[in-house]
Image 1: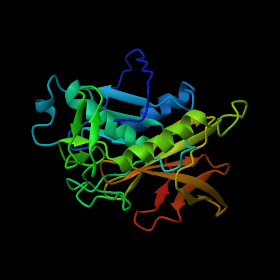
Image 2: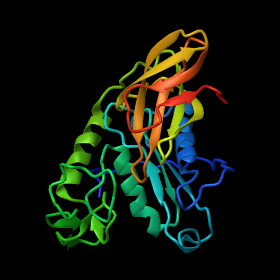
Image 3: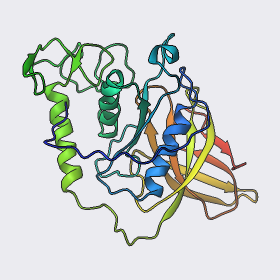
Length: 278
């Protein structure tokens, strides 16, 4: 599915997570941000993508009997952006393999193909039904894949990868593997904080993170305000979720004793957040 002659997988030791991650989507955002933070904490190389795999029940059908979120990733629009190269997904063997391919596709900048009611579709996708459009080739089974198969970035099955998605992934992979680091490893680490943008548009504070790789996605103007009226304007970065409404903002810590934060450039969310920070 991916334009790569080889892929290096490294399985780290298990990482403990005690908060609930529910089938309806609750808790997925918090876990995703924790994986992104873990990647930055461990100073992963720019070309390394983290994928958190977990089993919230012993069998897939027990977790997903009434439908479920199966994976989550931020949509990384800027190819230089190494900050958020992390995704998460269910780990039920072969059943979850294409979920992983789909979510890492989001981390490579791919939006949804228009099939199965997926939100946030790629308006440039060339095939109106979200199919692959041309014959594919399965290297493992040595067989042609029919053009009517759905693209891996949609919600339909059976699925494969279209020439459009394959080409876009090739361009991103080439950039990631060949580009020099966007920021020197000698640069001082910077502290940021996640801001959760819920499915209802409401804002809540997330965890803090320290990184040498600055976030680059979709810049937004953020204004912090102190109790005495002093203001500081900074740039935050917006990462929409691939699989559900909402996303997260990554904002630098202000240098003033702020009691209020306003997102000035996103009219569709509540925009204002008091700073009773954890």
